[in-house]
Image (cartoon, rainbow, N blue to C red; front, side):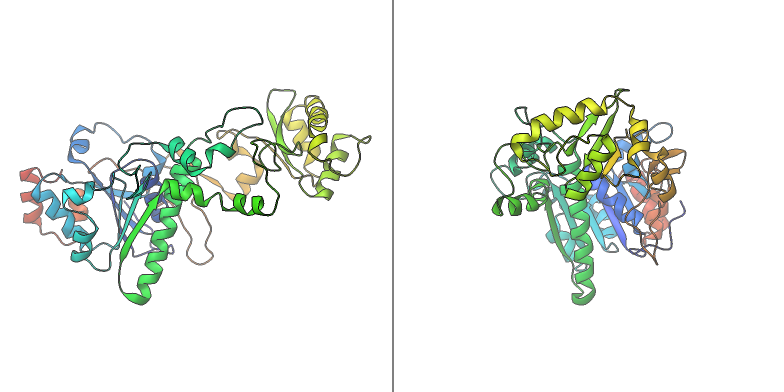
Amino acid sequence: MTRPVTGPLAGIKVLELQGMGPGPFCAMLLGDYGADVVRVERTASVRAAAGPPPPDVLARGRRSVGIDLKTPGGIDALLRLVERADVLIEGFRPGVTERLGIGPDVCLARNPRLVYGRITGWGQAGPYAPYAGHDINYLALSGSLWSIGRDGEAPVAPLTYVGDFGGGGMLLTVGICAALAERASSGRGQVVDAAMVDGAALLNSFLYGMRAMGLWGEERGRNMLDTGAPYYDTYETADGKWISVGALEPHFYRNLLDALGLDDLPRTQPGPDGWPALRARFAAVFRTRTRDEWSAALEAAEACFAPVLSPWEAPEHPHNAVRETFVAHDGLVQPAPAPRFSRTPARIAGPVPSPGQHTGEVLAEWGFAAEDIEKLRAAGDIA
């Protein structure tokens, strides 16, 4: 695999212990930014693999090695890789890597410059730390899930965006980059402990501020940004599709009324008591045209609108096409690396690897002699 020679993290070596969700997302981002990411797969996964790898976008841009983390030889091989790594990412339950003999204390003793990134749902400590959980549970405990939904209806899980990816993988990426920046002056690595419940709570910071300023009530679906206000919501169109409006500011609101032809309405936004009637007017008008017809009518209106696109439509929209927000890589349309860097552009480093595809290549590149690799393979410590 040809790896990028540019990117803000070019030259950084990352070990990713095979996991799900936020850990792979973090590793994907680091790879997009130029790091050399090596995924450590279970040897059972390598031996069970057949045919081409699945088109898992989160697995793009890294190499794959198979190491058995339940044998002394496999653990020793991993620790030899740790000695040359800048970052290690693990997403096991608390205490698992310690029991395997590859916890932070052991790894930092082998490589004091290592940034040891770990991601869990509940965190490394606390009453819930040993429990199983999923994104919806972390959002629930953080206070985030309660806030998402319409008035009088149940909370709605926003897929796994808030916990797994925003409050989990993205936060771990920020933490790792911050630790690498600090290491440049101190010369020392450290542990980055990211928990999805912490990250989901952090994403709620704005809400605590708005509540303290008297701008957010305690009822779900009755506030400015939670579908309470009719001028910040989505509306069904004549073809069963949807339009979003976000006309929060007074001048955008006036522009929206003009574009909708609602000349009889006052040009000032009503208070909450007037929201139900206004919502009914908006809903009736939006049902008179298709989504694309409304898009054409609203594009020049400066009304803070956008068509609600499916993930499959989004790559084809002219704005996304001009910006190349989505790219086709290895025959698969997928989101492009982001954000954008002026001097050291991010890029997809390569296709999704097959499990264990690069075991011999990586071990040799990271300092293993050929005879050592053969011994490890013969013993079943690597695959």
